[in-house]
Every structure is written in structure tokens, then in C-alpha cells.
Image (cartoon, rainbow, N blue to C red; front, side, top):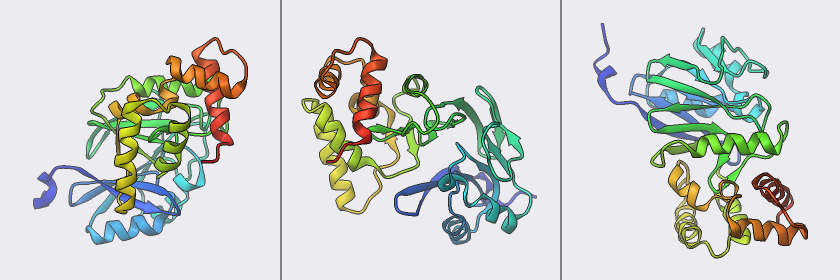
Length: 263
């Protein structure tokens, strides 16, 4: 017999963890799917507060702040399907996911996209108009290149940027204001960026998350999605003190600059 709440729409809950992580709980008032549970405690508290039953865990990559809570959740809730990339150490993984896979879960279909760069096997999940992209694309930023190459990351960002502009970007960290400072340093005449910056600073001043972000805003303001623009090329060349020929060279220079950037 179906629970009377099972006809409710599925929504996404934001669960803060650690210093600046966001863990995601997709729920319909009865059942829950968790994305990147780096810490079990806040997830358990969320499930309990909303009286939810955990039915699946989705992992984007192997870093501890994304998978650290999986083992404890499995111990607490028994056999749960755990989805994650095949070539990364995902605790308790029951199903490896590959680019183009469609996962039929309780909340509907999740499309898997391979987006290497931050790690070599990183994946993203697309559900309805929402993108769960781990540490690949951030609000006005992108992940550090721990395992992948600049070319891989640029290709991954291109893929994500081609999704519809009304998509909500559920990345895994509240890095928005530090990313904003860098974006303003390299793209200082970008009117959309300046206006967005004021909005995001006001949201943080009110203690509100800046995530999810709109993909259309990322395309207009994220320097790592704008490496083909003349203004970004000129900034990167000034910092590098050398001419740059290709979008990849500009992107690589911007990522190198950001690695050591102090606001």
C-alpha cells in the first residue's frame, strides 16, 4: 500500500556540512536520495527531522568530503544502492555509473555525465532541471585539477555549460565569495558579474546559501566558462606576461592564477 505522502513532489534539501560543504537530499516527504554524503551526522539529522527513508546514494567522486559518510549511512539504514564512478574508490558502491547512463530511481531519471578534471573519474548527475556537479563547476569558479588535465576540465565545463540556462547548479561548496573576488580581478568590466556580485554578497550577509546557482548566470559571469572571451584573454596574458593563442591556454592560465590568488 502506498503511503499517502508518496504523491508529493520531489524537492531538494540543502544540508550544510564541515566548513563550507553542501550535501544534497532529494526527497518527497517519505523517501530520500542523497548526493555526496561527506558526513553522515547531518544527513541522519535531516532524514530524522523530515521522517525520510533513505533509498539511494549518489557519489560524484572519491574525495572524503563527498563519500566520508557513506559507510555510516549503510550501517544505519542497511542495504542501500550506492552509485558512483567505476575507477574511483567509492565506499560500498553497488553500481558503477558511466557517461550517458540513465538511472531509474524513485525520484525519476538521473542522467550520468562524465566530467573529469578535478578527479580522473568525476561524474555529474542531471535530474529534471537540476545539475549535481560535485567539485567540477562552482558558482563563478571550477574545481582544482588534482588528477585531471586542464584540457579535460575545459571539455567537462563545456559539456556542462551546454545544458539549458534555466538549470540549477547544485555544486558542493560555498566558495562563491572567494570565487567572486577572483572573477572581478580578471573580468572587472563585466556588468553582469558586478551586479551578480552585489546580490551574492547580500545573500551571504543574510546568512543564506548562494547555491544552487543558475547556469545562465554562470555562462555570463564565470571566468572559467569565458576563457574564449577577449577580456579574459587580455587579463590572462597580463598575468602570464606572455601571449596566449588558444582558449585552452587562457583557461590553463586562469586556473594557475586562481591557485595562488589572494583577494
